[in-house]
Length: 392
Image 1: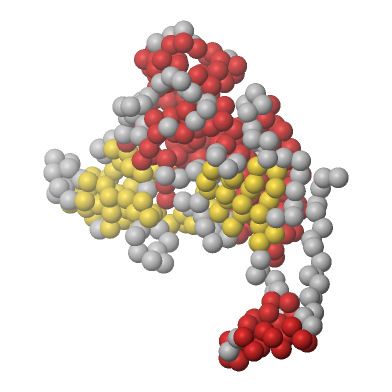
Image 2: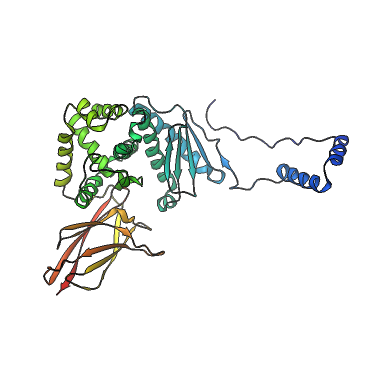
């Protein structure tokens, strides 16, 4: 019978006969014997305190959890959904999911990783969103990493190659949201891709999407892959996109596109980029009542910029009770047309995102407008405007 495996009871204490004990005491120095005896007593007699162990007794047909003992309640709440997720992904990848998967959950790390050889997915819960809603964070993170595991298997390792990381990131997010029926949260990927392209032109590897863009697993990092795959699905169909990913086992992306889509990769790339570059970002609220990003304050240093100088823009933004991730914030300086992506302030304890806006030496005195776009990882998008002044 599968399900929750009962924990083992206390180990029985083995009693050593007195005669044997005397022999042991004669052959071992008294000090060493006393130390060994103390260790044995501690092992058998001192009860284990909560938080000292890791529990792996929460098991479904295909998924086993490894979670800190004091967090068992979370694992028990999630195991049924994770089993359903495995079944969904196994169907989506044509039966390529590993038969047994271990999901390791920890609170001392914020990273999410997969180990295809061992069939292990690791989810780090050291994240503000996990503190607010640990169940939702765990379910989405595990669904995304389980999808990545299945996709690597589908492509026989092809999607683990550096040049294909943007496809793995994008499809993992798509499948995770399809499982939870939250694909509307992917809409913000078009706005993010639009601004990323204006900062540094997107394109198919090896020219446009290097591994340096995928140091994080979130909507912002996955946006180029999400938009490319959605565009391909709409143009060529879901089945062909799955075959494209499978084809990466033995071919490069350009050859796989030509073989599966029967179209040159340059044509597919041009169709995708045309949609990205013509996209007009607008505010998105995924579900009624969701607050989304919030701009609390704007600071401009100095208040009056001089032509030929650099203006510093500080944005104080929040996502619910937490600070909004800086990577999801973009600023368009309409005076120069330049787009910038947010970077953390760099000072411990700072609660703002910093932008540097160069003011050209040829800039005329006057008031200039900046456009601020912020997206959270739930796909909610907000747009604000602010102004700054330039003097000569």
